[in-house]
Image (cartoon, rainbow, N blue to C red):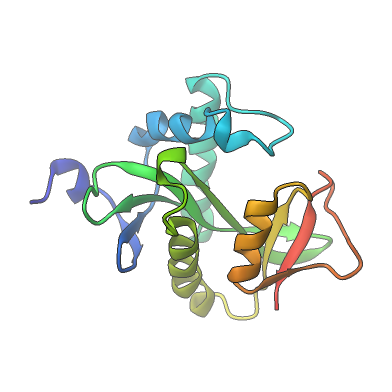
Amino acid sequence: MTTARQATRTVVAASERLVLTQPQQGDVEAVFAVHGDPETNRYNPNGPQRDLAAAQEALDGFVADWVRDGVGYCAVSTRAEPEVIIGFAGLYLHTLDGERVFNLYYRFRPSAWGQGYAAEASRAAMAEARPRFPGIPVVALIRADNLPSRRLAERLGLVADPDGRVDAEDRLIHRMA
């Protein structure tokens, strides 16, 4: 059964269990549910989003990235419940140390943790974007104490900079091997 909400979403990629779609303005509550949760921000020095206005600002950025670059972070839902956003994952084009790179991002509701969704969504997003942007390296910027995220990045084929380089926010730079 297809709902009106599903019909209006632009599908970016699909995997065995997940559907990745472009974020849209009606997603502000989902952005806040994920990014305003203290658990999902345990390793974020800025902490969780404080209110819907902060979520709207983030969502505006997600939408603008797609308009500007044709790639960006995706809303992630399961195939079984495509109307429910369980997280956000994808690739964002930006400049790191003067080099154009993709930043790999994944953040999910705690109820979705432990099921392999972040890895599955990340693989789907990379498989969709990388052929369209050949030569753009994939990086993940991860705080040193965020061991779950670092382990996931390693499973996805990213390795921490051997020299321990960090970005301006003191996050370790992991790069696709």
